[in-house]
Amino acid sequence: MIKGIIFDLDGVIVSTDDLHYLGWKMIANRENIHFDKTINHQLRGVSRMESLNILLNHSFKVYSQTEKMQLASMKNDYYVSLLGNLSQSDLLPGALELIKYLKRKNYLLAIGSSSKNASIIIDKLNIREYFNVIVDGNDISNSKPHPEVFLTAANKLGLTSAECVVIEDAVTGIDAAKAANMITYGIGSAKNYEKTDFGIDSLYDLIDTL
Ligand code: G6P
Ligand code: MG
Image (cartoon, rainbow, N blue to C red; front, side):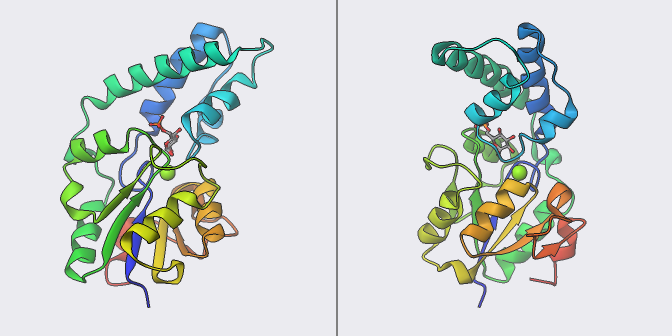
């Protein structure tokens, strides 16, 4: 029996892609590296340092660990400044309606995100009160597709994997949830992924379904 719903954050509840894109584009321009929306798409669900490594793969220069740390922190400072304007109106369609519906149905709710900025984003969106558990990039040592983020969320909810479902927009996130033995709902780029159990067009599709 399903008792807990674990939401990915970026791409499911809020669209921060464009802001991540602007952050990485600033680094790419500075370093003279080609970077476009297609490459940005590959960074969905991937941790900050791994995202930087993907970006730097398009350069001939070899970067030291110190240089990488500086670039990642520069990107993050800019990204966090862009988050400044985020508010509840940036929630993706159906997010608030679904969250309220699930609370009425007494499901336990969790966030399972690779982002180390999840807490800032959740507060900007003013949705913290709805979640029993928040697991983010600061709580895990292995990022998606490793199942750690979802296993930790289930554990903190006091549930087994079989009692949880995951809502994800990233292929790496679906891989992580399947590795955790959880049922998956895929939205956006995860909708038609072969490992996704149920593809959905919008979060509205889950109201009266779950
Ligand atoms: C989410 C996003 C990724 C991002 C990652 C780390 O999973 O989908 O695009 O790279 O979080 O975000 P952070 O805020 O910690 O840099
Ligand atoms: Mg995502």
